[in-house]
Length: 91
Image (cartoon, rainbow, N blue to C red; front, side, top):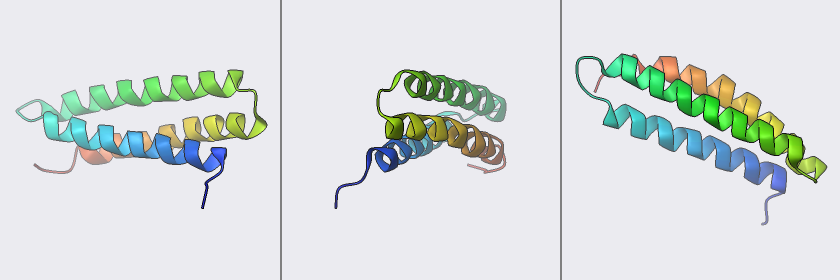
């Protein structure tokens, strides 16, 4: 079954956020790993937010615009929760 553009945009953005969060957590180890993880995740979240906001502003399709704007908000909501939650996961 083919997913709509809206669903694909949301799915891709959440999967990208998940993969990057796991990769950053696994790559940052050491005495200052928590701070490094938090700074890098904040940068990734901000970049993903601005990319979605830009695509949301310039998309021709109403469905794509809505998908990008909702993705931007979800990236902020889920991303910063993962950012602070990832600090408490011992590796």
